[in-house]
Image (cartoon, rainbow, N blue to C red; front, side, top):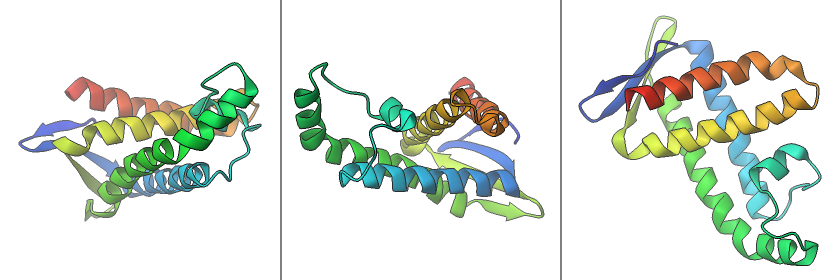
Length: 151
């Protein structure tokens, strides 16, 4: 991936096709996770899920009630963040083995939030001993950092 560059109506970056596909795949997986959260179908024993959706209260009953009331809206917003990444990846201009991803000004915050979700889940998996994700986590950090720098 080449660092993000400002363009008149947002930012652009050139990704290898495999990188663009991986980004799209991660966004699709996280979107499904957030959809399951909104439907109350997640295992909150999973450390990655707990990092994304921590207890709002110390009291277990209050935490459960908060989740029941607030989770559908919170999860729906997070699904939309990942939709922005999916759309950006799918609509990328492909040339040879690269894809130029354009992110409009109004989608930049969604991208940053989606990248944070991805990094949070993968970092949790690395902490659980699955070090295969470390390289992807580091790369996502670069994608996010260069996006922040260009802003």
